[in-house]
Amino acid sequence: MTDLNELMKQAREMQEQMKKAQEEAINRVVEGESGAGMVKVMMNGRHDVKEIRLADDLMTEDKAIIEDLVAAAVNDAVRKIEDQNKEALSGMAGGFKLPEGFKFPF
Image (cartoon, rainbow, N blue to C red; front, side):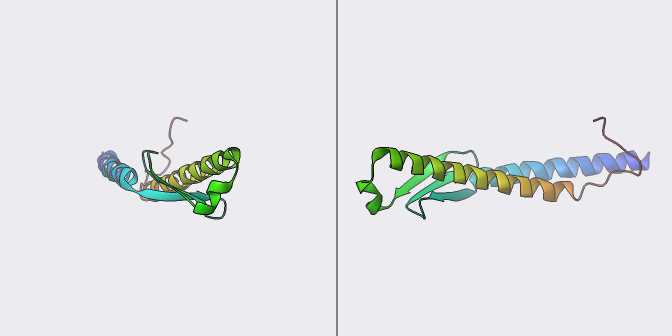
């Protein structure tokens, strides 16, 4: 029974760590960019775009090019957020110890 109690304790601790990581992720701001830095997008962990910066030189370009660069910068920011979230989750799961022979049902 001690193993089960220990497992439950670890599960509660992991749940608390997960909640804290989610709160930190929401407040974290990443910068995505494209066009060698001509377009920069600041995005938070909720995928809310907080700011977009366009280089002055870019304003002479065709509208379609600007739209493509903005989309690419947004996608870059999304990937960075997802990578950071994966890293945070893998770090938490590493400390979770299952009893010998315990297997998940999947």
